[in-house]
Length: 491
Ligand SMILES: [Zn+2]
Image (cartoon, rainbow, N blue to C red; front, side, top):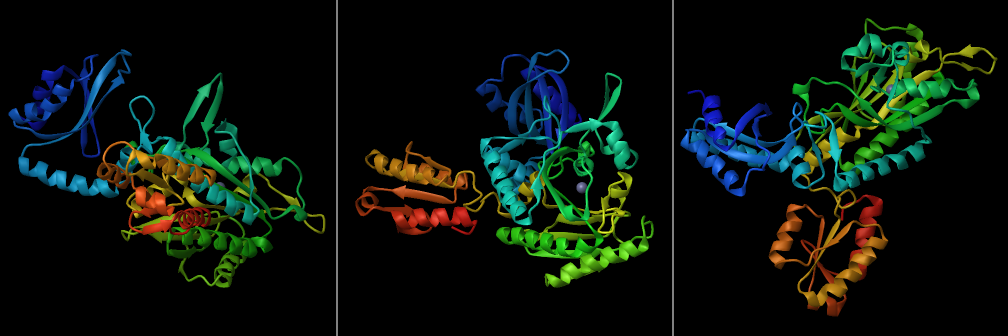
């Protein structure tokens, strides 16, 4: 009997089998029964499968709504092999993967999840703790935007198809867009933010005195990747870019790109990333004036040199609508990620007939610079979660401090400490439930950066004991936490 038939035969003992499928190396089965699988059912699934010659590990179980009948059905996730050795090898690999895979870390620590059954594939739901991380990244970029004088705007998540036809996305990008018809009008879900920002630019006539004009948006975009390519937060259908569009004169490209590069490098520094920079120049199928191309390429090169940044040249590798700078970073596992692209664009300003009047009162076309520092917030989160194996630095951790009183006698002292930390907007939790050893292990599993133990000795001396750091006076500890949080430095 084939493995699949053996599994079907064994699982049928728990109820009528509905649909089944797989996500990566995990199999899922729908079981048509309204009452949940009992604890006993769940403990016997593996042995029942084994009796039918299947070596399996039950990964998860739950219920969901049947799309057709609207009835509740049971769902189980498992992995199954025809030999015990294969299962043992899989378990070993699974444990290793779990430690660094952002999808497992995100679910284990209750940060986010993707729910295909009644939500959507490739669209993550952020739980309160995941949202804390997300907010801190966005707060960081908001500060950078202020320094860059890039003004935040907001634009809607969909637009009439006419916008996407004008931008060229309908013609070149239609397959990746969510498009539908409603009340005789065709609509497109936002796949990029640029066309909207251009409408803001065009709302009033512009003069050379208005430039550079800088727009920023945490813009949520929707792109239909192949569902087989979807992966946690790193390949998704829905993501939020820390997107920027600078409208500049050709003469302003160099100084603006220099400012952008400085801002990007400042952000990479915070994460300890060493960037690698590539300059991509005019391809054979380029559009636009060759003189303008040369000017833009020289400006990009000039900015890199002025910023003292080493780069390699990728000849003829620019987009057909302008030269670009690609920035890659390496994570702790040596994997290379492309985070930022600084894209000069002559195409969209032309498509949308953007203009400004120059000092001689003549109409000119601005150049657009597109860039995002993190890229997509979701993808950036997946990179840093794996880079640090989930152990985020104090400033970014969703629970920054956990206070563990040794006994009830120290609860008042512990509560006072929690209140102090909360005043400084530190995410802090007090855990007084269970043995100290168990509470320490829980805090370690939750990857809390500052685990603080307080016993009678600490109360008497007005001190705290920080795991891995020893005794600190209460004052020192508070100052250290506040500094690391505020300056985004190591604790
Ligand atoms: Zn853009």
